[in-house]
Image 1 (tube, chains in turn brown, cyan):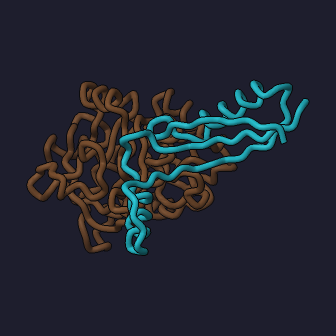
Image 2 (cartoon, helix red, strand yellow):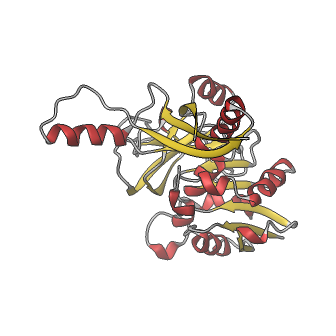
Length: 225
Length: 83
């Protein structure tokens, strides 16, 4: 009954994720990618970081790591999977979710709190929220601009698989509130099924009260509770 | 078998924003150069042995599909030459 936080070479948010989950009473442990996925993993976190130096494209190398085959199989078997930041890049590169995360429109690394609008409250990741609720969660990325083909974007919207959009404090999805130029202000999406999700913002950095900022991210990780 | 070099060029699809290229273009303009646009691309040179040029191109194309390019944002082309 343990959530596996998959640690690749260059992951650096794996400990944060384990600690945030422990705070929520969730049993979680780091799993080194080369050791393989425990067969009894009850959930999977692909954590943030700079796996393999962001070589080629952020997440490209980790996405082709053998453990990702096991992650895809577990996801197909119904195990909840979330990719956070670099984990989101790995998730999209490995085909768990549609689209791609690429260079911020600013061409800069951006580390700042952002507001997200919860677009669906009927998924495991957002059951703690109300639809339309605005939450504050930080971002820290250089390649977080969500790009997706027009057809795939139409499908995402039609299938209601956009989970979070960047917005202002009032929940308006303006250009000014879009930190990285993401298509349609998209910050997080669902895979083919609701128990697979990726997002660029860091819920594990907005969970522990003693960090002194928002704890709005806790609701996302409560999916594993 | 013949020795080939397959050159795979990966570039952003037309219309996909390229902030790095834009930053580079602005830097060139700061240096006094005049230009109306700049596009960048990644080039991979793959040395491989194959029965013929078509096989070499097929294998390089598969490498592009599986790893070198991301089909959401990239186009690519393959050129093969004997090495």
